[in-house]
Image (cartoon, rainbow, N blue to C red):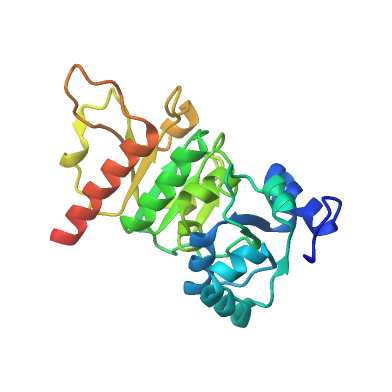
Length: 259
């Protein structure tokens, strides 16, 4: 019989609250991860888990990974598949989830390449931008007001482990300048008259991406040094935040690795 076979179990209740309540996540300093790929990332990054739950079937099908995780972070608690299915945030859970402490990554003392985000409310876009920022070599991400919680389950899922590897700071634009100094901040905006390819990204730089619906707020615009745009054919609609940010991030990477 599984260790957990009731929806009234204390750990089940805690995980449900971590999945649904941003304030509770912040107070506990913890978030929930799901799936085999995440568990493999936990092992490869040598991260510690507060607790992990798995179905007996998952443990049998992933015996090597399960043994490695157990030696690294302690034994799992087995859970009834129906309880896990009701608990999980995904439609088709793979059979494993865990509670992970929020990473405490040091912020660079003199940042050279950052991503700044304002009013990014779509979890998929934020997860994409976190992954792209890490892959493009950004040293950190600044989240301004109105951004979705980076530890929202949908952001966690779409970030695919990048949350563990890049520091993220949340601030308001009036008080956060010390986070991005000495970077020049470039806001991606349809009205920008400078192409993103014309910027010298080898200099200390911050890329700002505004919200999906209304772009960047006036407060965010006040901290920007220049507006840039992505040239497009006239018949094309504007790009979403995740795509636009990724395009600019990888142009910056191209310049910074070829000069």
